[in-house]
Length: 432
Image (tube, rainbow, N blue to C red; front, side):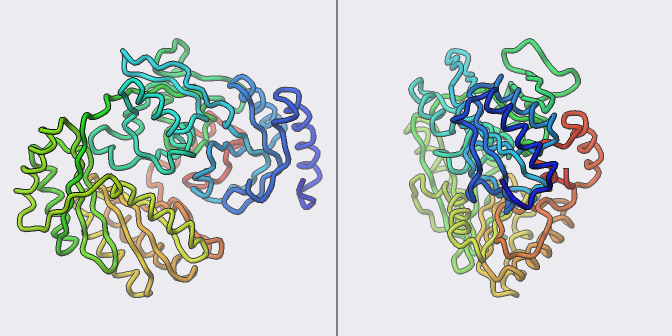
């Protein structure tokens, strides 16, 4: 227990801990360590319910005690979002890790929130199926965490975002209710599309306990074709040309590095003959660019930027950018100019849909200045910039930027679901 915590908070946590040991069991209620910090804020207690009923009861006990609850899956994205205003209880979904039902003939799966993406993928592969999702750190990232952060990669070009793939959800609300919506369920929360609403809400509305997804068959073959281009403008021109063609590609990205030519990567998934025919058609579009054949490693480019930043956490930052596909070159040129002026190292990966990940390495004060200026440029284009990783020494800068006209509606929804602001207080857009 933090000795500096207010006396009433200490009493509330002690009362909650007693209740949690009854609801769960003593072995799965423990004091926190430095590893349980959230964006630099130390939690006081970690609880790990064994099923969704225990989770809902535990959450209600914390809510009744007036404590702040931080949901955690694999812990891979705890640094995302603003630092919480309060962080009393960490609620782990690690023990809710079962695959409830794989209806392979219907191409659906229902899975508990603590199941990792890798565990789910391995199970589905036995029936030659997959969840067409390429999230970060699949061996550790959980279904609940992936949904809460709306984390998806290059495959969303063909298969859609998480909001397109999730068709049902079970959500534990702070008052102890287990709300179900979509999928193969009967009980629904009237007026809300829960699967879409909680995807990307950073766990501020409720704690996901189960999710149901639509699945796709595994591809028979895959093939990656890449090419080097002269600059960002040429890269964007080719990206738009590929998008306007009749090619049936599954993923399309541009990789930028400060000292190298931009590189375009295209993923085809089909039969061996189909991939070969698609690759030949692509090469005719790419002429006279230099064409290279690659393996699957290039599709880890986004994760590599994060890994680089985490390894050099004292002097690097990562941000997620969203612009129109026609604005990728303009956005990248602004990043390169601002980073160059501060002598910062940088790199970026942009998907053809206009979503990009940028990496910056510089002194913490310079990072804040660069990110502030890049955000101003991106928002002037109608886009957004969200900071996903930052050094502790970097001057405070809001993670999310402008929420536009949506903020009041978001606050109203938050109040409806979580009136006491129990879940992740202050971490989301506008301090929600």
